[in-house]
Image (cartoon, rainbow, N blue to C red):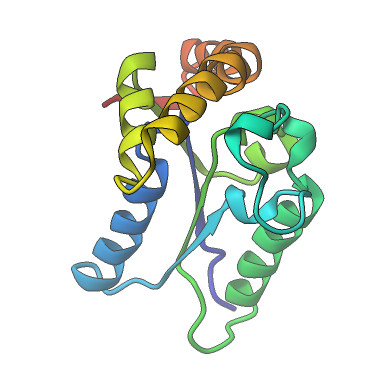
Length: 177
């Protein structure tokens, strides 16, 4: 029987680099260390079907109720179960990344390692605006307004207090970006 894979939870505010870092870690583990890694992006678990509406028309889509946590937890379990049963080409490391990750105890308890990318509001907004340089000036303005109205308040309400508590308890490793 194979050992269960390590589950790494990667959390931080929107624009802190979670997706970039999780994908880079998976690539590095596969290349240098020769380990197979699976990345689960919490963005793929939103309840909202299809593409979201434009920022100008968008309601608050940043709360924990927008994520299908049960499905994410089941997918983590499926990855770890396959590996522990010794199936071929299984995963040695499961990387779970998401803005709201620390909010869900069922996901957090599955993580052997929790890493928090701490970044400031201005840096996160600049990175979020920089994701798509083709945006019109009006869309950039709408995104900045949405970030101020919904994204950063969700971070300070749902995630920052939990991150601070877990860091004080020594459960969470913090990286300043």
